[in-house]
View (tube, rainbow, N blue to C red):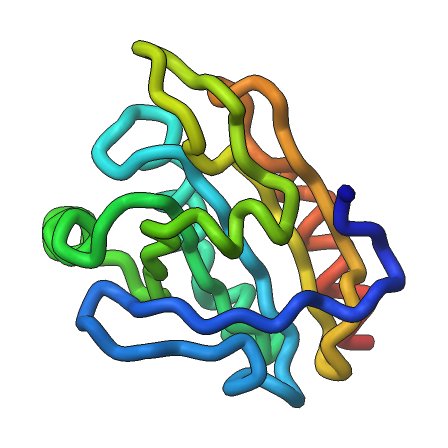
Length: 157
């Protein structure tokens, strides 16, 4: 079932690229931007995450925390983070549970890969309510950063 605007964000716990467990509830009282991406080291995923990295000041100024989520292992994400110098947390959904909960899994992706996260963006407000939801069917498309930024501005008048 798709995640809908206005619903309580499903709680989750995932390991970050430094092998530390992170819970969504750790960020209660802050706006959270979830950026799901299919695979580390691919062109569009790197463009998506570098766009966030290069605009991190906007998110920090709006008291928003960015969490990047993929089904890559923590080891892959650590290397990716090292190479790209991301200034936000990357989380491994290796068991695909969070991607399934947020309804962001491809049943089949390129090269017969199954269960890869769809490129998606969600904004969760300070009370844990979904305020923005975008799930892209085409892995070649980027999230609508303008819409994300506009929604953040509305949440931080």
